Length: 237
Image (cartoon, rainbow, N blue to C red):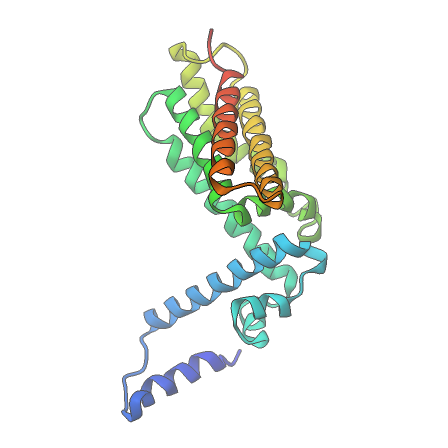
């Protein structure tokens, strides 16, 4: 395919400031390509959170990213490909973070409490990201057929680091005896519901015009309760 952006970049780099400049290296062009793709994916996530999959248009995403519509189509053939790339990027980022977090050599309860706290804090700091995760499960059928992807298998893989950590906690007596995978599901289910509750509560309080300081106090109290109750579901006696 003819890459108009690539050849334009060479021309502009050669003519910058009226002087002949060296063309970009392959590595520089790859970095520009990566940045463009990230800009498009970030714009797609924001448009998706506002409109959902069916109502989101590539033109909306291009406008949000500040890019030409044709450039978005150059990187992603169509809307489905774009949202598949967004879904896979977000799921991989989440999996990698969770894997790395639970690989730390820390006490089991400390790991679980800290993880729950961090993901809940992210809801308050970056609600767009959390709303994407909460909404995408309802739209996955637009992107893949049941033969192409199994959300259950992905969740099982995502939960594996938690399951292993809980297994260790059972062996060390910090976690009550039971099915480690089931307890990981219970823990994550409680945290996920808490995340949704935090986001909804924040929106409602802000809509009511509640002072920021009061909103922060109330949300902090809710966050502590979510963390404590999630861990208490599996904590040993």
